[in-house]
Every structure is written in structure tokens, then in C-alpha cells.
Amino acid sequence: MQKLQKTNSEYKLTEIGEIPNDWQVKALSEICSSFTSGGTPSTKNPEFWNGETPWIRSAWIKGHYVTQGEKYITSLGVDNSATHTKR
Image (tube, rainbow, N blue to C red; front, top):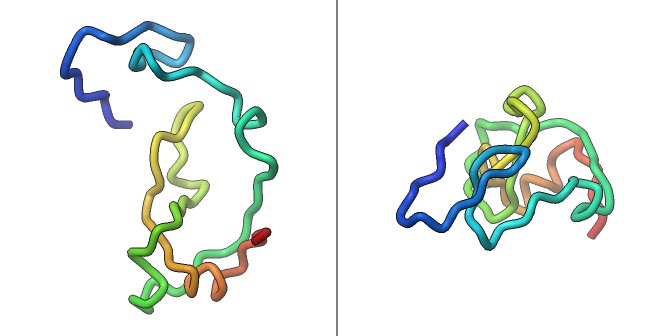
């Protein structure tokens, strides 16, 4: 996991560690309406990747929280994956 880049002393200690003062710790159920799973589209097709939608494999999750996507996927990539989405 990445450490926060400290540029000033405006951080607070929380149950998940040190975070900026203006952040809040929330349960995922408080900020997400659903969780879905599926399958990753072909990594050999460049049209599926480097889009705007964060993409993460469950194997990439370490610890109790996620701070960013592992990769980013395009809408075409989502359409060509086995994920379950609501649009």
C-alpha cells in the first residue's frame, strides 16, 4: 500500500491509519449501492484499457481498504467483460 505524501501537518489518526483532516472514514456500504464481480476483458486489446473507469482485481486488495484503482478501463472494455454493471 502506498503511504500518503505529507505536504503539511493537517492529518489525523483514525482506525485505518493517518488520513488528511478533511477526509472521513466511511464503510463501503455507506458510499456504494452495490458490489459486483465478473471477469477481466482481454488485456491484449488496447481499446479496453486506459479509460476512465477504475478497475481492480480482488487479488490486488490487501488489507481493509482500497485507495485507488489498479488499472483503468474503457466503456468498450466494460462492455466486453463479464462484469455486472448498472448504467
